[in-house]
Length: 255
Image 1 (tube, rainbow, N blue to C red):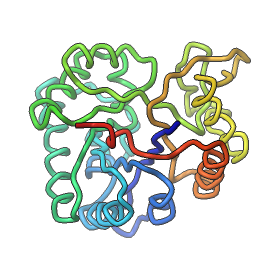
Image 2 (image 1 turned 90 degrees about the vertical axis):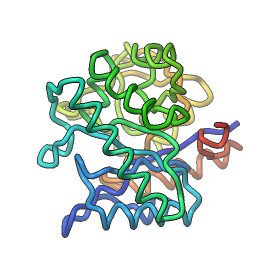
Image 3 (image 1 turned 120 degrees about the vertical axis):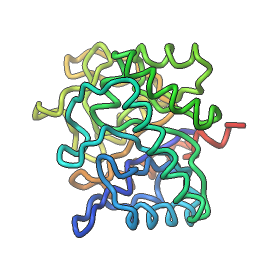
């Protein structure tokens, strides 16, 4: 049995340091690397790409709305043509830096508000899909587990990877609890590790409503910028090892 663990990295910007890239990379199997639209400057992105190559961690383009001030978490009403070009630009830029760093972009994961919006907004979803297919149809696409977007993309020939979140609370319908709520993000390492184990072994987690919620997860996101992120990641990795669950990237099975 195995699972992919991914984390959002490369998000430092100038003198503003974000996350714990150096400590998280030895733990995860896939790295969603910022492309400069919500976070990340060229130097920090290149540094993270080189580190990912060093640890043999699979690389994905963490594409976003153009929203540095809002960290990509603000909803934007972007026209199809504009979003198509934005996503295409970000994949292309990251792939160029990845080549210099000795690695390659294997997948795309939308960030923040874009990630949540395309789960239901099929016009913006189509722009993301078309940009991926235009650049390289072999790239996988990471999407929110249980969202209508998954089947929509698969019908167009996209290799879609369902994602769950280790430290996020879920509603009974499988939706994520809004970050505006105090209990949206979990912080207890042992509790989070047990939830990850439940996702893998039982196929779901307990929702905030107290109902077991099925979640089909091909990859599980570990946040690298929350309080205690490194310790949480270590406990998760240790728990998986104790239960003979291997951590490896979903890209290992891609052609």
